[in-house]
Image (cartoon, rainbow, N blue to C red):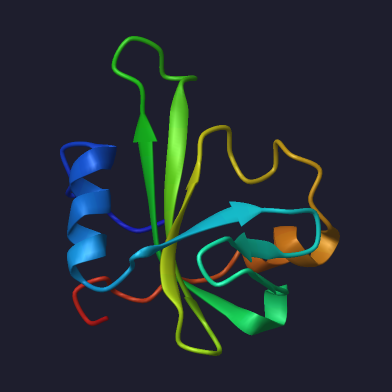
Length: 108
């Protein structure tokens, strides 16, 4: 996980969208779904370039993770995971994909 210098999830989303991460991704068991281009991306088809964790102010268990994702075909977008990537029933390949070392967000 990268150092999080953002005040809130909404500020992080706004900043990453300004950097070109404009698509929205949804988790599926074996892939990420992008409804804008109606494509699914398997773990080998995308890279996680940013990851930031946000904890709820009133309840530390109320957390979310924001992922900046770039696909092999150049699609850049965001995945907001409100419960942690391991909470849903994901395939082993998808879980491994989310255990990567992330690039420095200032260099992307």
